[in-house]
Image 1 (cartoon, helix red, strand yellow):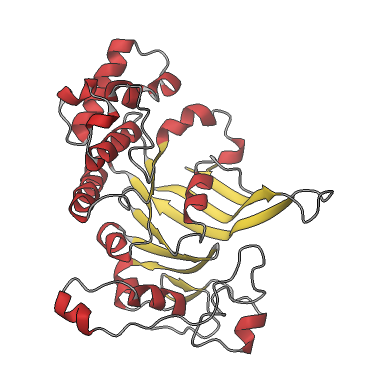
Image 2: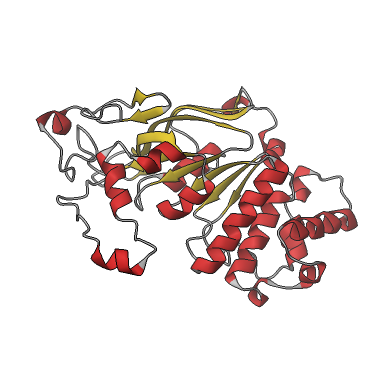
Length: 323
């Protein structure tokens, strides 16, 4: 069942004009993003810092108002949902910094149960606490944690509390905004395995945002690559990791370190030449043209469309062919 259907989504921010008397203008951050997501599936969204991944994730929940396009939730346009505030229990988010996302003045039971005041206002305080303890148990934390405070937790435990808070409303979709980037590698594995286990048991759909291709490979069913706010490749995980098609995806893959120290030591990396384009003045052609070793004059003047180059595989490159 398709839960999320994103059609030509654009997102921007209002910024001051060029002069003191100039009107504010819209600075586009995400351009024309389209994809669907079914229940029980994970879409990995990857790209460099500043490419629009987190902005996209927040726009999917309408925490940021889109500047164009549509986000359909179970076939309904979220812009016209009459009960969006109550429906947010079905769509939750896990933040990047697990400690900063928790109120230090509250016990964990209050933190986790707080969304229920909005989603299920008829619950008594005792019932809300029971639900919070149940959610903590789902992420592997015992009832003893209910009366602890955030400063008593490790980074991994704090992120588990963040996941419990997302789960307490019994959602169908969770946006995971770089949820393991602030954690040690061993703790990253624990959190990833926890998310995969919860997905299997609850049928959750996940949008997993990360710059770490190794982590995305472990958790995702499909991979979407973003560069300067544009989707440049979209493919099933196995096909993507077997052979990325877009030159930008290939460059990201080459930057992934080898787990074997001996192989990593002997590996010759390829540094990207050219300048990273500015979001304030994006190039007229391909967003990767200034750094692409395969770029031609066409790439610098004409923006390539995201097109199907093989069954289920999309790429935005003038010269990419079927693998």
